[in-house]
Image (cartoon, rainbow, N blue to C red; front, side):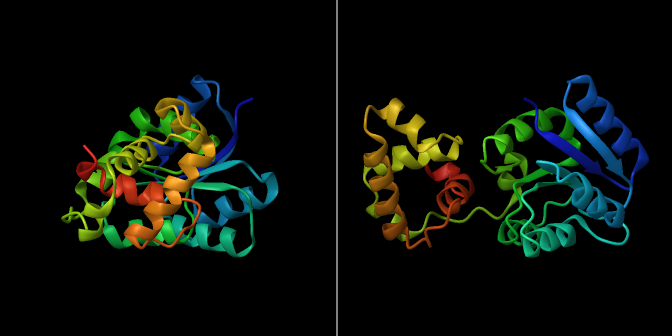
Length: 208
């Protein structure tokens, strides 16, 4: 069963290209909009599982829609498409619980993988975006991690679930969760649903 989707972009060619591509791939596209006001109304009316939104749109930006959806506790997963490789926007998107961030120049190449990942309740952020952000040295706490904990983080960075990691490492789900708890403590990361996923993706170069 394909996830229900609405899309919004104020560039007609990009909107048409994305819409046609998703329909061709047999995705369940319910409707599309050319501005943030109409996009928000489509989310309220259709309650789609995924909303693919341009960040810069008239009336409401994609981020403003994400903020409103979070405040209203809507279950729609927001995916942003943009040309912006801006760390502040990326951090704002994370804080608003945005599920996806895809760069427009790679949209058609990445959107299927993004939808597939988001449909599994796992956020997807373009690797090109993460690579373009300021890469810092690994925090000194990183050196306290054991080789097993680093392997767990590496699998997390590849969007693996705890169950999948357990199968790959021949350990139980509970042992994986214990490792994750220890990593949170050692790296001093507040344990939220996706905190390790974001950390692992942002520091992927240190996990090789």
